[in-house]
Image (cartoon, rainbow, N blue to C red; front, side):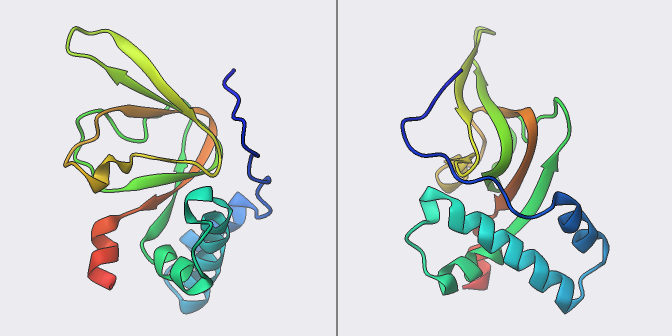
Length: 150
């Protein structure tokens, strides 16, 4: 099992069922506000975003959408068009790569508070494929939406 030398983020204190209820309730301003608060809390816990102010986290939450990953599902496939990168909120994800000769390799295991799929910032396609390793919930961050909202 891969262990990180740095401290792991604290366990989540909000209920995934609450997020699903908010998502199912439509786009009322109240439901959007609850969802934004949940996403800001998730972003705040991530080391990548630790230096951001509440205002900056709020702007970032506007481009994030929650993603729940079912058992043994791919979050995206190697070679897919890259349109978002992900913050793992709960669970664990294994990132793997298939080489041209058919061999595969595990690149890394992603833990809560870590990001993956950052290639969206540099290239048009994903160079690897993350799969759910344990029950996982993510926040998908779409840079194109951020540029449009700035």
